[in-house]
Image (cartoon, rainbow, N blue to C red):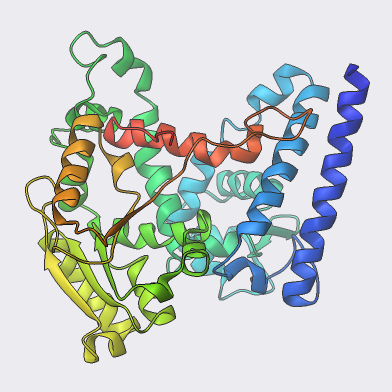
Length: 395
C-alpha cells in the first residue's frame, strides 16, 4: 500500500467511525453532542458504553495517526507539554464549580479576584484549556463551562481522578528518569521505590503510595475510583456478565463500592460482601447509607475487614471480583493476593478480574495497537509504574 493510499484509508476510517458514533448518540439522545454543550449527553453517563468505546478507539487512533503523519514532527511533539499544568490550576481552584454560578460566562478579571491570582496569567491558562475544548471562551477573556469542563466539578468523581493525576502522577513523572538511573532503586520493583514515593521521600514522606494516601487524601482517592466506571466503562460488566445466575459476590478490595454499589442496584437478588481495610470501610458504610440504604436495610450487603496479603476472603461464595487490584502491585504481592483468594474458593466459585488487557489488533493501516485510540491503556500502565512500581499485564 502506497503512503497516499494509507492516508486515504485512515480518512475512510475517520469518516466511517465518526458516522457510527454520531448514530449511537442520536439513538441514545435524539441528537449528536456539541463541543459547546453545557450539559451531559444521555450516552455520556450510560452504564454500557462498550460499543461506543470500541468505535471511538478506532476514531481517535485514526485521527491522531493522520495528524501525526501529516504534521511536522516538531509541531506534534510540543503540543501536549503544558496541559497538565493548566488542568492542575483548574482542579485546585475548583474553577468549574465557580463557573457553574455564571452560565453566561465570567470575565477573567472577576474570576481572578475569586481565586486570588493574576488575571493576565489566568487568562492564558484558561485559553489553552479552551483550545483543548475544556471551557468555552464566549468572547475575549470571558469563559464558561461546557460539556467537557463539567467533569472537573468537585462533585464529579472524574474530577477527583483528574486531580489525582494532575497532582500525584505529574509529581512522580517528574522524577521517572532519576529513579531509572538511581543505583539503589533503578532495578527495584518494591512499591516503596515507586517514582511518586521517590519524590515524596525528598519531603520526608515514606512508605508506599497507599501509605501516603492514608495520611493525606484517602477519601478523595476512593471517590476517584468510582470515576473508572465512566472512564473505563467498568459497569458494562453488569450487563455483559450473567450475574442473574449467581447469588453471592465478594468485592475484594472493594473500597467504597465503586462496583458493588451499582451491582446492588442492578441485581437485587445478590448478597454482597465488601472486603477492604478498616479505614476504607468506614467511608464505605457512609456512602452506602446515603446512596443505597435499601441494600443495608435488606441485609444484601456486609462489610468485612480484610488485608488481602495476609488474610483469606470469606469462603465459598459464587463470585470473587477484583477490580483494578492486581495492577496495583508487583508480581510477588499480586501472587500473594491471588493465592489467598484461591484458598477461599469452592468448586462452584469463580474469579472475575477487571483490568486493562493488551489484546486485539487494529484495522490496517492503523498502528497495530490502535495508537492514540488505546492511549488510556498505556497511560494507565505508566501510572501503575509511577504510583506503585507495578504494571498492567497481558492475559
